[in-house]
Length: 136
Length: 136
DNA sequence: ATGCACCCTGTAGCAACTACGGGGTCAAGC
DNA sequence: GCTTGACCCCGTAGTTGCTACAGGGTGCAT
Image (cartoon, rainbow over all chains, first blue to last red; front, top):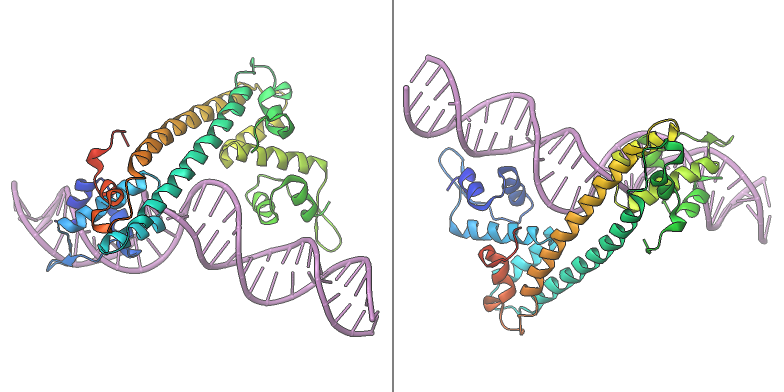
């Protein structure tokens, strides 16, 4: 299939597909006589894997490791589990941080009654870190 | 104070301070005879405002708007509240997304017993979006 | 033959920094 | 008086993960 079809099949956009090839995440496909990229099913599967992993927030380098693992069926897969676990821990950490942040922001907003900026509680709160409860 | 002191006083690193000056977020400070930047308290307060806002996840452009408001004490401050409210909504959205993500990841990890990568459930799950519950 | 959708390459842009190279300044210690 | 070290200057390039051109070529229908 041509790059446009692959793009529609996977939801990755065309520029992104070429970018993945350039950084070596996708192998170089065959070319047609007109020098168009010509993809097969293994390419589609690999790109689906990459897009799905990206949607789950894995970095390109993590995905590279995961792909290396899956390219080498004999290797122990504990490494894949470790990468995913570490990522899960990062996501949980991020959720915790954002929750603290939401609390700060909730405290800050809704305190303006439309007065002059000189007395604005929002601006005041932003300038004064000392009043924050969270540890950011 | 010199840039190193300002850096220590605010937690912003030196390169970042010069960057903020370059993009017009901080005013150009006075210079000593040796051409060193020489900051005063207003600079420190402004930088504290910027860093705190960045820690709360406001973009540089949002911060620029907030600073414009606070520089003009006569203006209505409802705008500040709108910026903060919109940002709060974005944070809540992000938390919701990450929570879905965490659920996916929790489903994926811990399914490896150290077998061969060929049978790895983690790798399999990443290649197969169809089995995801969440709407990412 | 001409329009249109599609494809090619290479480069530059985005946010928000961070790092680096190649220099200048200043106070302390020998 | 000379060196050592900590600090400062500027300008530019790198980071991540794309996205957006510019300037061309290809393939098919009308």
